Amino acid sequence: ALMGPHAASQGVLFYTGRMFPAEYRNVLFNARRGSWNRTKKIGFDVVTVRATPDGRNAKITPFMTGFMNEGDQSFWGRPSYFLQRKDGSLLVSDEQTGAIYRISYRAPGRGK
Image (cartoon, rainbow, N blue to C red; front, side, top):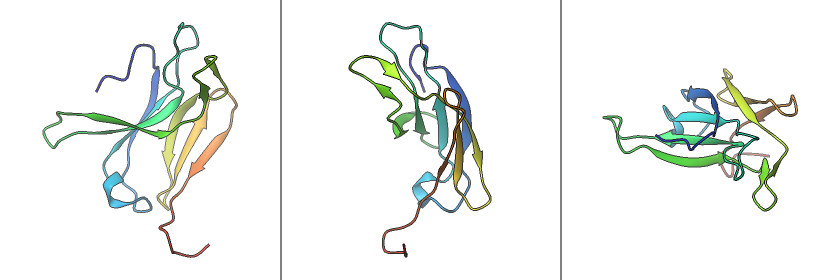
């Protein structure tokens, strides 16, 4: 799958956990750190990549966004790497801020 010019793909992870819905199992997560020195910036997000069993027809879908303002091309986060925890949640490191985000999933109607 083409990630875009200067998207700066960093971390990749095939999700094997059980916390997220089944459609995420064995899907590739890709942290696109983004390039600061382009006129029109790209990246600064996490996308998923799904392909057919033969590896063709890859589809890229936004998963974790909001780190960049398209209007003025400013950014405040650069997702970089992943760690899948035993409980199935994902940790995503942010190179820009030094933060680590935990992404978890709870099915609707399953408690608070």
